[in-house]
Structures are given as C-alpha cells and as structure tokens.
Length: 441
Image 1 (cartoon, one colour):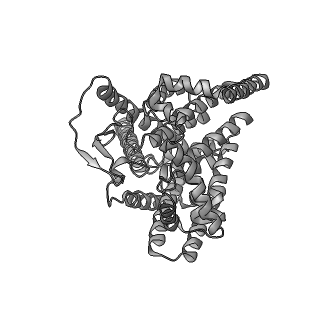
Image 2 (tube, rainbow, N blue to C red):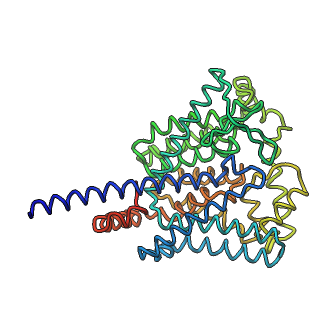
Image 3 (cartoon, rainbow, N blue to C red):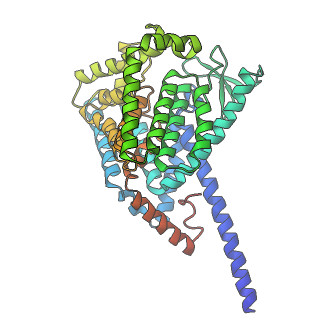
C-alpha cells in the first residue's frame, strides 16, 4: 500500500510538473506575441487599428496572478526603474495640465498603458525567461522571414497572399508572422514589422542582449540574426550591425592589453574612414547601390528625415521648454512644421514633455554604463548604439523598447537576479503550478 501511494504521488508530481512547464511555455509565447504585436507590428498600422488595447488583458492578468501569489511587493523591488516610471508619469500628467486637449489626454493614456505594461512585465517575468523567449522568438521569425525572402527574391516566387494598405498607403502581403512589400520595395525584408529599420533595430538589440548575457549559443544565433539584418537592406541597421559586431569582439578581450589594442585599432579605423570617406563611399555605392546610394545623394529622403527630425523637435522644445507640447500636441505641431517622418525618439520626448523628457535618453545612457560585465570601452560603444537607434525610428509607443530599458537599468546587479532566480526555484519545488507562470521556460 505504501509503495502504491508513493508511486501515485510520484506520478502526480510528474503530471503537475509537465502541466506547469506547458503553462509556462504557452504563457511565454502569448506574452511575447503580445509584446511584438504592439511594438511596430505591420498590422498595427491598419487605419483605425488600436493595437495597444491588447496590452490591457495581460497587464490585468499579471497583476491578478501576482496578487493571488502575494508577490505584489515585486513592484517596488527595483527603485531605479520605479523612479523612472514615476518621473515619466508625472511629466506626462504635467504636459496635459499645460496642454489640456482631448488628443493629449488620449495619447497620454496610451503612453502610460504601454510603460505600465512594460514595468509590470519586467517586475514579474524574470530577465532570464525574457531573454530565452525573445531569442527563440526572433530566431523563429528570422528564419521564416529568410525563407520567404529567398523564395521571393531568388526563386522568383510570387506569393499569393492577401494584401492590405496601411495608413501611409504602403501595401503589404500578409503572412501574420512575416510581411512582404507589395511594390518596388519587395527586396527588403521587413519581418513582422511595418518597416525594415524596426526589424533591424530589434535584431541588433537581440544581439546586444546575447552579448550582455554572454550566451554560449551566441555564435549560431548571431549568424541567423546577422543574415536577417543584412536582408533588411537598411543602411542604418547594417551600420548598427557593424557596431554590434565590434561590441562582440571587444567583449571577447580578457586583458587590459587586448582591450587597449582593440580600442586603438578601432580609433585608427575611424580616422581612416573619415579621411578616406569619399573613395570608400564610392566603392560601397558601386558594390550595393540600393543600400549606400542614399549617402551619396544629399537629397536622399532617409538622410533628410534623420537630420531634419531632431532639428524640428528641438525647435518645438525651445518654444515650450518647461512642460512641452504634450504627447499628441508635439506630433501635431511637428506635422505642421515639416513633411518628413518623425524619426527621433530622444528629441520627441523633449518636445512633448519639456525638460523632464531628457530623463528618457539619460536612462538609456545609464543602462548602458551599468553593464559592468562589459569593459569601459564596450560600454561607451553601447551608449553610441543606444543613442543611435533611439534617433533612427520612433520608439516612444513600443512596449518592447521600454522592456529592454527597464531590464537593463536593473540587471547590472547580476547577483540580485541570481538570488531572485534561486528563490523562485525553491518556491517552485514547493508549489510547481503556482509559480510556473512567472518562471523561466
């Protein structure tokens, strides 16, 4: 009888563990899909489509589950991140007081929903779990997009898929987890996003995550992510790929001499590139005119947007430096001043929130400098990468970007993460189902 009871209990424990692991993986996939679907997803640009409302259900679910597990104290476990969220919240409220319009109220509500979701997500989903889910998700999406890219561009296959036109008049063929431009831009891999540059940015940030985490599988992941990034045919993304590759090499240096040697080599390459930029550019244009011709032509729309956008935002900031124009007012005023697209997140935050908006960019700089597992030079390069991607696309309404920021602001203290992970493992042994939802897969 005793042996039978032990066997039944053992079988029950195995069943509980299997179901717990299944729940963890399903919840992880659903959360990751929700994050990606609200962070530049192509279908979110459909006229009248409000994808950010999709964040309400997982946000409420996480809070209710945390209340049930009595783990709401995690909301104050990271004071630095909590302080940033508080400052952005207060600054947004003050911008409404200074610019009391219905569009400002609605847009601020959207902004606060996004940062609150990102904050709660990073409080209750471990950094390790997020890293695993994101890398797996980007690898799967990347491989699928590469297959579609090869079939379209090299096999000459015309995919018979439904077509939709977004708010900017851009036609896409719908593949749900991949999209193909249904016009002359078909040669650019846009992945699941509305613009290849956004795909390139998140591919680059995933590579940075692998470097920071010192992933043992980073080489094969880098290969897939790098091929995807090149297939975006985005000049800025390819430049960031080079910077991230440099970051990877610098991170391999073990001694001060190696780091000094690499730093000297990098500086010499930079000087060499500046002095010989004209013949280098001419060679690059000859090799790939689609990618590099925009730098050879001063009137390139891509270059104009990335130069003019910060200038217009800065002019708006100088007009209302204290509390800004409001999150919607800044966009409206921007559209009046120029016809080029908004591409600068850093200066948009200044224009919309005033002086407090600088805290957003400062937070990214601080997040880079806190990665103490990297060398000082590597952290300086990371600052350049972060500032660069913030000013090549608008990221102010992307939950995934805030999630990266919140994790990296607090993950410098790796010992704390390890302690939290150990605590979770101890609790899971006692209550396997109750704690699977917020555990790593």
